Length: 495
Image 1 (cartoon, helix red, strand yellow):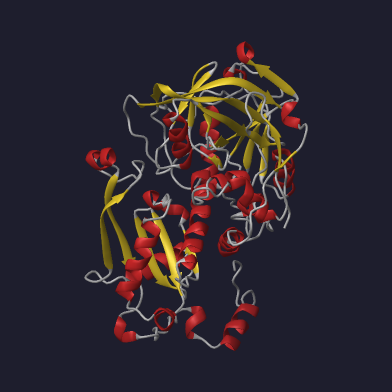
Image 2: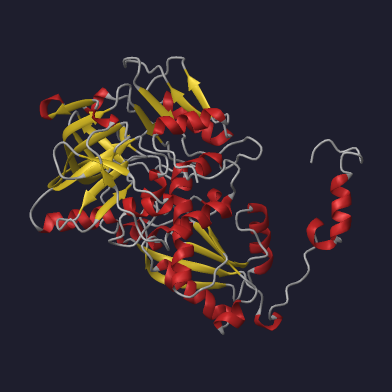
């Protein structure tokens, strides 16, 4: 496993496989960076590195789509795979298994070093100016410029027993204030409440441009009191190097491009949003009140790079760096509860509204239950997990279906889910207000009806599945190989 330890090393790795496009033409931070980055997502173009930004000194750069998908043959998930230390050609199952398997290892805490590149420049108190960096306005209609879309928010419980790294959107208010979602059901919100209950603001550090694995671990819905830094160490088998902040005892990844420090107010709020979001929509309105981040220090590398995601219709980092770790955690949770799932997957095209679980055909013997009982158990486990509010729909299929293949998944859903017995409903479940189809009342209450779709065979089939009428299912292996060997000889130019 190749542990890439800085954003700049990652950029070099992307360049080596044709997944980076340096943009030297001057671009405007006002919407143009956002438009180019969205176009890259939607075409599978390389990640754009903007080197010349209107109104900003040379050397200040923005990296778009660092975890997007590729249109290159065999490299569809290459940016995700390389971020996770895997071969660029790794596919969905390898990525999920790598993330899920690390959950069974003992955590390795980060190790503190004395100095690091992120300390090359230090600005304190009155010298703090968030507008020093080329933060783009990403979508027409956004409530402001979002300084954080892919950085790690680091907070620690007052007793110092739990350090949490997470991702949430954060918008600039003025030169030394920001505001963003601090949701009470997310761990940053849980820890913020601990500090607020003591009548104190929450110390925070916001880390931009750290090693490429960290957005994926920040997007992984680990259980309470499991620290993401420890999990990252377990994943790579070695500790993440960190340095102490300037104004608090928090520690931040040493190779970060930019670190912003301060406190999240326990009393002050500001209007945040709206913003184009991961479901692919922007809801118009005046925004809502969110806690204020007061910034007391900034440290940054020479010629710092700000990585961004421009959220929207799939597929961007909201779906790769959040959806794929979510699927890995779902697989780990099912196995911890004794469900022998073969695979879990969040179809990238579903905007994290579907979670697919595949089961071996032997599950009846292993669990001694009916399909209805199994899908109900799966719903109870997954809707009740930390990530449960984000997932409104679960599909359960046999593992003869590849859940990472959307064509197979649509076929299986259409032909295996019985309209009368194929849906198991869960009423008044905790639901993220960002789920796209909610009514206004459901958004306000943060609960809704959810569903598990039973795409398993009827009870009277037992373990017998019908033979698939396909190239792989309807012809002898020897004939399949002969056809593949002679494909060009038949006159076909495309595989």
